[in-house]
Length: 256
Length: 309
Image (cartoon, helix red, strand yellow):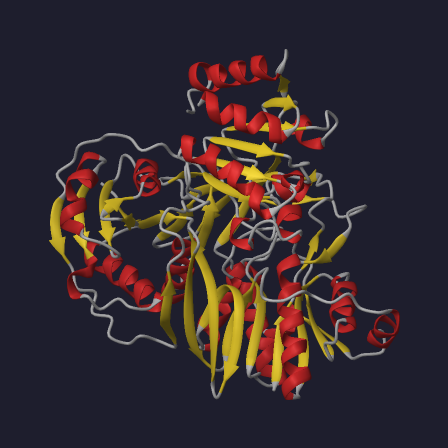
């Protein structure tokens, strides 16, 4: 099997974001990591190939720095990587999907594609759907359990209130992974060393014929959300604190 | 007047409060309430009272059985009724259907938005786990977005609510087939849509101790959540996890019991209206970023709070 895993290089959730200009952010001093949900996709792809044979190709659309994240994915067991380079901080998801498809067309289509359920930077939750539509294959997102059969995949997803839905998809398909699917492995030192020698090919996004002016989602402004200024700490003994809390929630906040 | 479609979600033959909230977000436009998963006739009166000019019975043809068919049905309704926008709830199902519909229709989508301007075609939404707020302009023929649950309060606005049967005629199920729907405990409220959430952290210390939070939640009509630490320790299942790699919630009241307050946790509950924290450690980071705090042992405070409610 040939499996693509689409991995995004994103600021760590714990990083402090500083806005630059109207609609950008400063990258200096920010720690970048693999999008957390993508790691479940990498692990599932590697596990699948370990069992069935084949190769795992990491596919990333991002800046040159994304290569570090891709090396991390290769240390987890992926075989090689393709980096589609762009300098844009926020790329329209439909254009990202076009770029991913073009790179796949060039490399030869796979039997499956994994992504994360969404990315923690722009949180737009749609690239995998745009990619599936472009490839003309089925997609399931927020997948927390997966099994493969002859020409098909059976995926389970949580749908809220403790309900789950079991979907059958014909292969090839796109699977958006989430927590529960597996436990992503921590690469060992020899794997990290080996990953440094694996093939990582770079392509400029313009060479794939993607016209960045065709985006239809325009980020106009980015603003820092002020944090709450700190709790009003309730005083007195436990009963007094609880009585005051209940009064506040009923009378002042009117939320119960 | 611009026509807006709202994808209505129902449960137990009633319209979900969160769907009524989404209708309020489209006030000032001619609202077409699109009912696909329940009885449109039964929902008509409620929908009319909340501003629906037209109540569309999308199940009239009974053809929608897969998520791709649901998306195709939305696209068909947009065409049939000349809708210039379709909004829905950012629930698990809503986010999925809208993403499919946007890809199918070749339209941009804004998922899980916190605010919108239908005339300007702009939305406000979280970037970087709630640390920044982005304003996006969608260059869309049909403006598609899902709205974070509970951000808009339902509002009374009597309209005609004319019932219309519409068969979207989506015969092709596509490549995704629903094999089974496993129903969870019928009493379990959907965490992402609950008006009040009570969450337990590592300090809950054992799966059986979540019963204490269940009792408190029952008094409040709340759903019970868990921090990542509690889930990873095996005290709660992943469906209950709030925060990054879990669910995003935005209730009017969020009570965090024994939760330390990591950035990843705040990513999933920051837009709650009122946040209360109960923690034994007076220096827990959660106290720096919540509204009301009680320093104390959750095993002492929570049962007494439950009594007082």
